[in-house]
Every structure is written in structure tokens, then in C-alpha cells.
Amino acid sequence: MTTTPIRVLLVDDDPDLLRLLSIRLKASGFDIRCADSGEAALAALASCRPDIVVTDLRMPGMDGMALFDAVRQQHISLPVIVLTAHGNIPEAIEATRRGVSGYLTKPYDAAELVEQIQRAIGVSGGNIDKQTNAAWRSEILTRSAVMEDFLQQAKLVADSEVSVFITGPSGAGKELLARAIHKASPRADKPFIGINCGAIPEQLLESELFGHVKGAFTGAHRDHDGLFQAARGGTLFLDEIGDMPTPLQVKLLRVLEEREVRPVGATRSIAVDVRIISATHRDLDAARAEGRFRDDLYYRLNVVSLAIPSLAERREDIPLLAQNFLQRLATRYKREVNAFAPESIELLVAAPWPGNVRQLLNVVEQTVALSTTPVIPASLVQRALQGDGAAIESFEEARHRFEREYLIRLLRLTEGNVSQAARLAKRNRTEFYRLLSRHQLEAGAFKENS
Picture 1 (cartoon, rainbow, N blue to C red):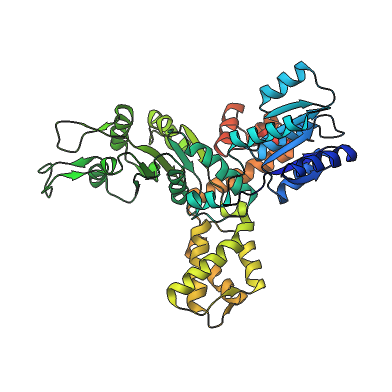
Picture 2 (picture 1 turned 45 degrees about the vertical axis):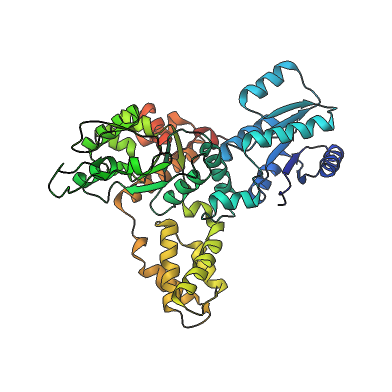
């Protein structure tokens, strides 16, 4: 198996030092990309996804620590090593405190830099081999830097036993992500079982989750193991947890705290060992405020939160996904369709996709079913987009999208000044910060020269 070389983004305003450092690291087997300023490095991040950034500290304009802060906002798990000719102990302590992965003073020892790069990569989980990728995320196709960074976070989380809470719009692939986390976890050889909490009536949901004994209710003709027992040793995925009725929330919380279930009608509890991954497209902050979702259960489930990017945030993946769907559907339906016309791809990339990946699959399926030529024309894609029922957002999804866009406009207008933005929105600062947190927006990212 051939391992993909570690890709290093080098940043230094001195062209001679940049060239020398590049030569030394290439000789050590690294794949090198170069940038002569912090601003150029940020532009490079959008086109090439490095495994690590090695940057000079003192540079005109954006210095190394400002670059680190900007990288951390966009790619939280991407490691950064800082090099400086002006190093001193206070600077090194401050850099380490803020989370840089390494700090070296020029003239540096090349072997020590290589060692620091390899150590930082090992800690961050970066440079995962392509074959290894296929083992745990084979169902998730992407060439998006945003999605790659997100999946790197998910891989880090997978190695632990903490409960994971996945948020994101409907159709974005929350169950695929949950399966990938399970495959990357130490529980991979045990069962993965998922259930949609909003699709089953309350009376049946309790029995499905916790099981029942014979005679517990009319129709209970035999003992039935619930999903907690069926998933023993593995992962239980609770999809649309926001739709779970309040009485069941109390019982679920007790199971999570005591790590044992009592089947309906039983007199004794049964120990269970499962990892919980839950997901929702609902606004649980609003549900908690209105008393429809318990705070204690929320905090028990939400140990680590992952917000899956929408399809609109990873548009470079649309041609890749569309072609993959096309090939699969053409095989399934035995149709001689093999490609989209260039104009068709342009339409797909430009569409709003409120229904996300699920909507894209629906549109591709319509075009495959109706196409009479090997290449799908733009007219057929346009027809599918206009007639696709998934294009109609739910009220909650539309409100969420409006809120986020409104907050972004306010922050841009006020250059990240929360007091001014809250005043314009006629909200107090506390409530405004809560709104920013709900939509995962950082006011500092909108400040001038940030």
C-alpha cells in the first residue's frame, strides 16, 4: 500500500528561505506548496488542502499568528507550526497556549522540523491514506476542502467513546456520517443500528428502543429485544432526536445515565453497552426554550457536536456526486446514459439545493428516467429542478436560512461589532450572542483585516 505524501504549505516572505526550506522538505519526501504571505496562504487553502501549515512568524501584513487564527477559524483541526528568527520564551509560550502545533527558532534544525511535522500530523489525524479513507468513509464522496476538514474532525471524534450530536439540514447525509464514525471507531466490528425517532408512534418507539416482555401489552406474544440490546457493543444512531416525545426523553436519559434498560413490562433491568450518535435538523435551542426538549438530555447527547456542511457549502462536490449517482442509477435502470452535458453541470452547480444531497439524487434519478440520449441535456435538468418537490423548503428550514443570512449581513455591515449588530436587530447582546452560537458564527471573523 502506497501512502500519500504529507502535503505541507510553507509560508515565508523571504524567497531565499522559502526556496531553501522547500528543497529540504522535498528531500525528506514531503509534497510542498509555497506562499509568500499570510494572505496568499489563505488563498492557497481554498485550492489545495494541505495536511499542515509551516509559517514564518514575522511577515508584513498578516503575520504568522494572525494566519494561525484565520486557519483555525476555517479548518479547526489543521495543524500549524511557527518558525521565527526572533523567538523568545514569552512568544513560544503564547503560541503554544493558543494552540500551535510546534514552534522553532531560526536557524532551525531540519531533522527537528521534520520530526515536529510528523508528530503534529499524527496528533491531528491528517494525511490519512487513501485506502484507509475507503475503509471508513467509502460512502461519502467529496473533493471539497470544507468537507475534508469536517471529515477529519469526525475521524478524531470516532476514536473516542463520547456521544456525538450531528446537526445539519435535511438530506445532507447525517446517517452516512454516523455510519462513517462507527466504521472508524473501535466498535467497527459490532452492530450499527439506526432508528428515525420521528417516524414511529410513541407507543411503539418505547418498545423498539427498550424492548418488551411477553404479555406486556395486547399483541406482545413473545419477548422482544429492543435496539439498545441489538446494538450491544456497537453504535445506536438516533435520527431526528428532536422529534422524540417528552415522556420518552425521560426514559432515554435514565438509560444513558444508568447504562441499563428495562424492557416494557419487565421487572428487571438489563445492562447495555452502546455508543450513542444522535442527529436532528430541528432547532433544539428553540425546543429547549419552549420546554419541548429536556436540557439534561441535550447535554448528555451533545458531548461533541458536528455540524455537517450543506450541499450549497460544498458546491465543488456537485459534479462528482451527480456523476456517481448517474452511473449507479443507469446501471439500476439499465439505461444507456453516461454523462451530463456541460450546460447541465452548470445548472446543477448553480441550483440552491435546499434539499441537499437527497434532492440532488432525486433530480439525477428523474433525468436518468426521462433521458432518451446518452448525454443528459440542460433542458432535462432544468425540468427536473423546476418540478422537484424537494425544492420547497419547510418553514423551519426557510426560517433558519433567513436567520443565518440576516446575521451575516448585520455582521458584515458592522464589521463584527456585536453591540452595533444587536442594536440594529433590536435584540440584547446576550440574545444576539445566542443567535450567533446557534448558527455557528464568529463575530471576530467579520472584523476588518481579520
